[in-house]
Image (cartoon, rainbow over all chains, first blue to last red; front, side, top):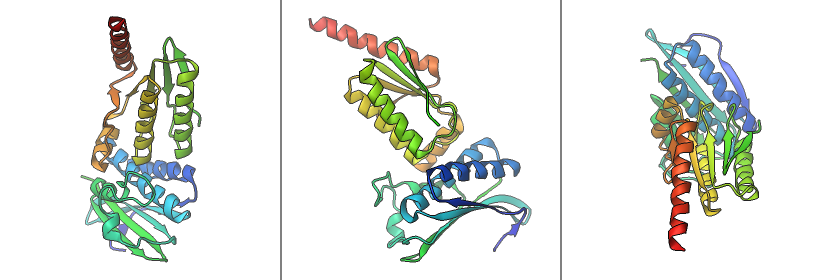
Length: 138
Length: 127
């Protein structure tokens, strides 16, 4: 891990629609405890919603890990969305606005990147996908 | 969590009370499209004041509701999108293009009154 972990991480298993809602609520709570302004709470919750939905749509099962991190005194929230689903065959394509294989709007990944400060994606075709995003407190 | 739908005059008002799952959103869509013809509503208001997240799926479903209801000959207006929700939607790349929105329930009712009355007037002048 690149950043110091401040508190215990929160793990939310993602297996159904309802888990998308609970993941984003837990993320909002954590960001709120961390002192993020209300605009950023909505931003973090929306990003979690998109990442969790990708798990349900494409991988069926996975988890969202929420962490409060510290980078030289700067507080932030880290969200890791990980699954052992089919993986993304072409990550560059999946990062394009409007590209979708499920009939959705195709804004999930590129939109999440715009919402958050940092975005990393690792996908092994056939093995799974892990997306890590961070938002730093201003 | 089911969304209650109230009939008020020629309008249907759906007030979202808490966070909705994708399944809840689909149910709301189907209920509204069904109810419009059943009660011969002229307008529909969806009040989303209570929603703290409107993500890509919710946006698409709300857009679908408005378009389906327009095909049924009625008007839809989405009211109460919170400022931080609007901010996140725009950042994400979402828009409710082609869908009427208003600040709150009061503004939404005023919008429908204008729309529906305008429509009546049009019909009358053609006779």
